[in-house]
Length: 192
Image (tube, helix red, strand yellow):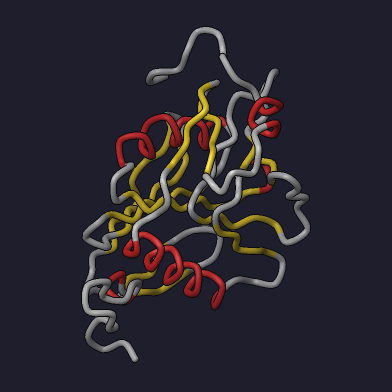
């Protein structure tokens, strides 16, 4: 495990006891992590992918943004907060959904790629979450599937290429169209 402490310093109870201060908090291997407000590009990518995922989502599943996941343990030392996840529609999610109910997690990794692909990937794998998508700054999407040794790359969807992404349900998209141009405020070419 990368960087996991020998003895957890914080648990889920500590995370839940934090005041609602408008900041995003996560629990990763017994460490509390606070993430700053996302950039406009990050928010646009989350919004764009959320719309695509919701558009094709079967009725028995649900897409959620900016909510936490509890990875079982004694005590619970992992409660990551992915940018998006897909779970069973009837999964209890108050305050967080259980990892066993989650089918896909998505991280938009503009500045958090190292943590997303190490500590968070390990937490998701420990929870048995089958699919993990990572959206990079160039808008490519790496699709990872949980195997015997952890997450394994299935494919990388590149901007400018319509790609069918495997996961809990098929999603076809060109990653180029996920976000408006945050500099000019206009949609990318070909997007209304």
